[in-house]
Amino acid sequence: MQLQSFGAALTVTGSMHLLTVGERRVLIDCGLFQGNDDLEARNREPLPFDVAALDAVILTHAHLDHVGRLPLLVKLGYRGPVHCTEPTAALAETVLLDSARLQVDGYRHDLRRARRQGIPDEQVPPPLYEEEDVHRALALLRPALRFGETTRVAGLRVTPHRAGHILGSAYLLIEGGGTRLIMSGDLGNRESGLQLDFTPPPPADAVVLESTYANRTHRPWAATLAEFRDALRGAVRQGGKILIPSFAIERTQTILHTIKNLMDAGEVPRIPVFLDSPMAARATHEYFEFGDELIPEVRSALQAGEDPFRPGTLHVVPTSAESQRINRYDGPAIILAGNGMMTGGRIQHHLKHHLWKPSTSLISVSYQSPSSLGGRIVTGADHVRVMGEEIAVRAHVYTIGGFSAHADQDDLLAFLATAGTPHVWLVHGEPDVMESFLPVLAARGLKGDLVPDRQPVDLTGPGYPDGRPPGFTPPPSRSGSHGGE
Ligand SMILES: [Zn+2]
Image 1 (tube, rainbow, N blue to C red):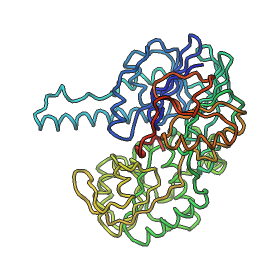
Image 2 (tube, rainbow, N blue to C red):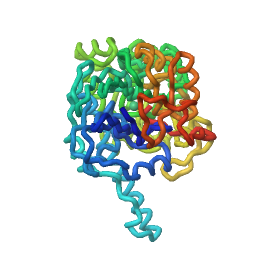
Image 3 (cartoon, rainbow, N blue to C red):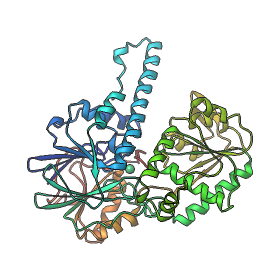
Image 4 (cartoon, rainbow, N blue to C red):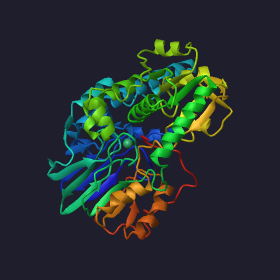
């Protein structure tokens, strides 16, 4: 069994792993690089394999850094099946259409700027893909994967299991060529407040393991809840707007559910809550469809016909015009808007209107890449540039780190605990984080290796003497990239 990674190797985003077993070639995930210009430039690199010769694609979950290059693959000639779970197919539609819209909007913006500078149109890179490319990709989805059920994919036995990361997320047991391989996809935080835990995996010969937070222990859920409640109470006392930048899938639903619980229990005053993200509102519908993946409290609320994601004071904001109107609303109110790192989306005009007021509170519940607007705000910048304008940061800024949807080190070790003594191949992490995890694995008698970028590796081979691919030099500092939360 051979693995060749064209993304999420020695970096976090862009998950794309080509698995070769004999004559069979299956691509696991087809994600977009995200985080900074250098990484995003990699989305335009040609794929160094014959796209049309692939037998199948399997998606582990619908985050953009796992599905975002699928329309590109189809543009390049792929016409085969794309296997996934049903919720992944539903969420992938929302995620990919949004991605195409952002690509096209970005292109138009670049084009206007280029024309003002006298640069010919041909020199502006076209969008990676557009809406019709997304529809062509969606037509290839085969959403028949079910947790615990084995399916034949290109002659391999593939069994997806619940990964507990976001709705529909799966890790895959792949059997073929005499090898049992686990592809972890992204694994969930076992204290996520919404998703059930991952299913303990069966024994395997090799595990390709995500390692986003392999060096970290998340704060316990109860402490995170208390921290969030205290931030909300403090923010209400400030009397101004309470901005919560949030990712549309999973984080928004977790936050809405948490706010509802706090308000219902009388722990936080019932102030208006504006959900100002059409993508998040659309994604929330899928949680009603596929509630059996959620924790019992949420599942039973759904079964009783209740809406666990709707605080009594919730207003869903459909249009941009109505989004603008929230700024004229007097008094304290919670505004949940995308995107989570504040690099685009409706959160930006709320920042422009409110960040400079001492009565405003900003509660960060998402990972903030250091180079993003959100990263600069949470690390104490006193001025930031928002929508072309210099804005003073006078708002009270709260950072709540415990809402992560990713496994921490304890979760990863718990995952490996039932997998026997597999060879562990690390992907989807910053190199320094993965390196620091190698001795932790060794202490448990597990051989660990960092998966090299683009170089093929034999998953059942010996790996590298020190776990690092030839020519690997650790970067001097963190690149700040991150995927999917
Ligand atoms: Zn993910």
